[in-house]
Structures are given as structure tokens and as C-alpha cells.
Length: 356
Image (cartoon, rainbow, N blue to C red; front, side):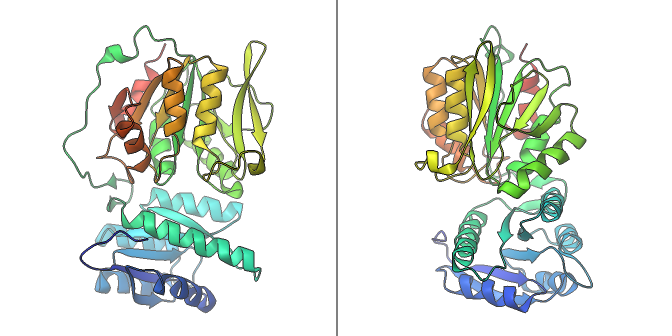
């Protein structure tokens, strides 16, 4: 359900495919609290209608004639910042374009499935409605490359002594909506000689986590790649949990090793890959000698893992509300009293880097 407000969520649909325009319109026009205010067949028309209609949310295709979705997005962000949800193909090329769009200011993305299969169509409908619901409560972007408009008071500061004398050997990071850009901000501020292994679980489809890891590796000093079954968690390296499955960490001799599992083995988890499973298993494998970090995201995935980590004696850190695209995952940890430290996004990487 779209959150109740004094007016409906005004949506502009931008896509060069008449089939996709009709499909998206058909899905969203039946959603309570949503009003379709316009349709555009390419990026140029999309920019014109965005500026004229001032929608609350735009669904934006990537590949279009005259002006593609990324170019249109950049113009909109420069002239009239608006929540934009990219509609992306489930390919490596689609993934790379999506991450470029997120860097340029898009709130999130929904994978496009053009199959005639009813199951595929149902999955696209479910994903689109969920993403629109999330976007409806997300912060409004400021402009490309700048992030979001702060919603609350100045960020909470942390005492340097928080990490002093703490038994930390590993770092587990979880995120969802807004996470791809937030994680890049965090990882880019961690020094190349960081001595502890880092594992990340971020809600992404299977085709996206590999290209995302490659993109981070090109932009950050640490070694970053998509995890595979049997990987050893090592210092100076970031492993991204692969999409479409769950990732656990297990103790093998003196090492902590990645174990990937099909979703059928963990039917209790809605979100894939599960942040709860990653953090819980890493807390057990490290006997609590780790830092758990929860960044922006919808829902409460990560809360149970952070609670378990606290019970094991570990340290927990979450992103503050002012810098979160969506405050759901950090809020769950704060409300559940399992957050030791609350920081704005631009301070989290520096604080992690202080761990000796």
C-alpha cells in the first residue's frame, strides 16, 4: 500500500516501448494512492513532461531514441530534482547502466522482464509495486552526485573511543534501497591497508551483483569482487554476496569461509541475499569479533542479525536518518536498541577505517 497522504502519488511513465508503457500504466493505475499524470515515449519528451507536470515519481526506461534514460535523468536532476525509478533489463549491460543512473541521482531500479511467461509478469508487477511503495517514502534527491536532502537535525557524532579496545576481526555490511551509492561512499573511505575482511549483503538480482562489484573495485582502493562458494574472508578485501541466493560464513580451521545456498534452504527470508543470514552467520563464525553495519534500506532485514551479534559481544553501527534514502533498516536497529553507534553516511567509512 502507498502511504496515506493528503494527495495521490503523481507518477510519470517514460518508456519507448508501447507495451511497457501500457504494462506499467495498467499495474500502477490499479494501485491505491497512485495517479498517472503523464506518459512519455523517449527521454526528451520525458524531461519536458517532468518539468511541466512536476510528478512525485518518474519510472524511466534506460535505452530510448532521441535521448536515453540516463541523459534524461541527469537533466531532470539538474533542473528539478525528482524521485526516479529506473526500469532496467536483467543483463550485465543493464546493470552497468543502472549503476550509472543511481550515481546520477536515481532512487532505485526495478528489473524489466519482457517475457510472455505469466510468472515473469507477476514478478515484475510485484517488484514494481514494491519499488513504487519504497520510493513514495524515500527522501527527495538533491541533484546528481550530491545525494539526498537531509530531513532532520545535524548528524550524531561518535566518540573515538567506541572502537578502542574492542575485539573486532571482521566487518559485515547490509543495505537495500539507496545502498549501491551509499556502500560506494563507505568503501571508498576505507584505507587500502585495512587489516580486516569485509562481507557485504545488498538486495540485488543475480545479474547485478557481479557488475556492481566490478564497478566498486574500479572506484575504490580495496580489492572488491563478487563472492563465490569457498572464498576465504581476508583483510583488505571486500566480498559482495551474490544475488539470487543466500550467503553464510562458516569457520573452517583458522579461516572464515563463504558458503552460498539456494533460497530454498532459507525459506524464512523474504529479502535476497539476506542481511540477517550473512550477519548472523558471521557473528557465529567470528564468535562475535566483528562490526555489523546497516545502511539505508526499506524493511527490517539486518535487525535479527545485529541483535544476534550484540548477544555475541560484537559492535554495531547504523546510518543516521538524515542521510538515508530510506530509514527502514537503520530505524529497525535503533528502535530495537541494537545500534551502538549512529553516524551520517560520510563518516561511516572513516570510522570503520579506524579499527586496528
